[in-house]
Length: 262
Image (tube, rainbow, N blue to C red; front, side, top):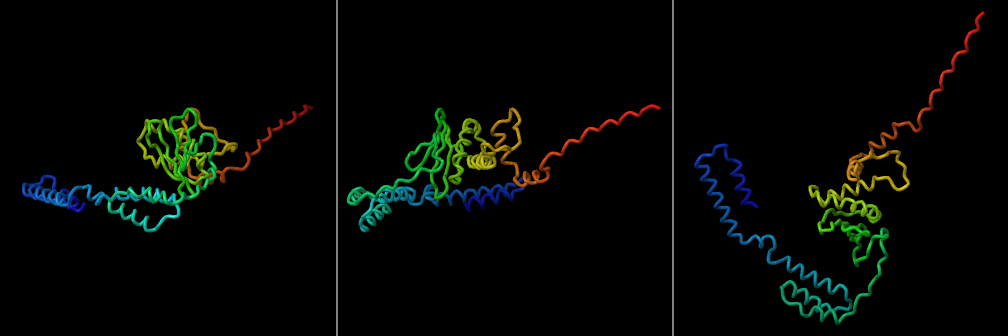
């Protein structure tokens, strides 16, 4: 980017009405930038030097095939890795794998959110209730879970990572927004996920009475944004300042007894 920065600096220094000499100098600088870029070679060589992406994909294929086997010969594994780095054929990959034994499969327990509507797809889970074209996929990432929301047309609408305890409530909340987000793509997918996750955390749990009745006609998205924008400190301060019980009503005044006339 250095040639571009030098050229942009020349452009920024131009006055409102540049003279012929200044324009000639700018054209000369642009010509030098073009020559430098031409000599540096194709842009693909800068982004993917020496086909590094292809090499990495090949290495991943080798590792994925061999990590499911045990009793491998070290020299065979090293030879396959060298072939992948040198972009040579891997005709011996499955021959080496066949000489070893499969690693015993370990059956993992179902995650805590695996309830009706969730499906085990082998390595990841999907949430798609009956009649829903959109769906949520969940992948384990260490102790947390990565979730992404997909529309019925295959559009990635939201994504992010949350603890396993939040997946059960967050997946339905994301799914309810799928139709709206499919039509409106003006917000970042990660920001949608973050706002929805925060709104789900602050939303009242089933059976919890907050004493607040949502205004009629207010959409779920508006209530979610309102819950996200509310500060917990401000809510706590309001609760502290309000009396714990309403003041007792004042007793009505007792009318005075009429005086007797003499």
